[in-house]
Length: 447
Image 1 (cartoon, helix red, strand yellow):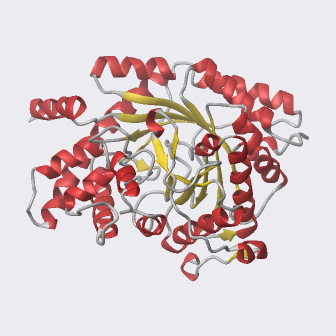
Image 2: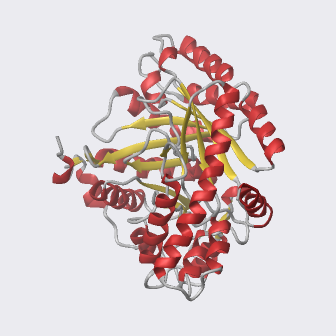
Image 3: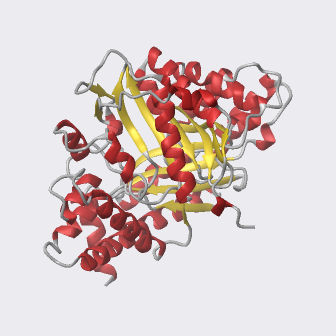
């Protein structure tokens, strides 16, 4: 039995695009706080470069020894708005530059945590960080930023929603591609290993290793074996496959944590697609029985997939966390891109799908003349879905300056390319301008 499992894993790696999407080291920066900003940044640089000095080396060793591709090595740090607030600095671009310098020296792909948590209100550091995001992303290439604007327990900070719409437009005016490094959350989680939303939560250990798995191609291939059979069989097949994929994530994460001398945190069970053919969540949905992703029944098929992945993965791993489910980023999924081009998938259907899967409206290009208010409206809608359903939702949109519906934006690598999608022309300007706070739902009061 053990030999068969090993052979199955080798086949999944060789033929079905199975990989470890990321090993992410979370690092607490609370012991770097200083009233002198320059001293704080030096402490941050030293803490990151000392803690993660062997991260890339260990990941490469594991990849070589066990033949399991590890696509990205990443770092997540405590939200910088919390750390920098003690200083007298008036903007936080220098903190992003420090993160960039540390990530470059270490050779990691991305570093997250240029972040703020404003679901219930702003502190001074939050406002300074948000104001710094456009310049910070323009001057760095590895830094990722996130802002949490709502939660089930706190409601939605509509002032922050409005501010983030304006911020995204400002980023796009400089270079739309920089928008892919910023995500706006509701119910952001503390242990997410995936970018751009990764940060190291305040309740986490000083350092920790989190793993994000992949494997849409593996699930697709497994479902090909049960064509024409009951939907119950489909669910069971997904669970069995998710179990195998997650066991590999648990194995790799445990070894990495042991060799780095830090605790093993979680495996994020998310199915993360890539632009590679055969590595698509949309193709899984079509294998379940849809003519095309976006057809009636898409949300139901996605709900089945998301639930089965979690059920199978939970049995395979000591600790699961992060976002865990199925990602539906448009630009990173070849079949999603084809469906958009053919007019079979629009933003409204994607929004409905986000009610039953991981995250939200992700890596979506919109016309360059999309207004800040329209973007804020999209953020508000996703935050409302997250707040009411007690799940993580997010928006990562790219206003494609100078481009119209049907044009494309190229990102390259894992980020792929995004066809520009139509946005409802009606404006929510007056709603966003009201500001204030959308109250938390009654079911949030559980004490």
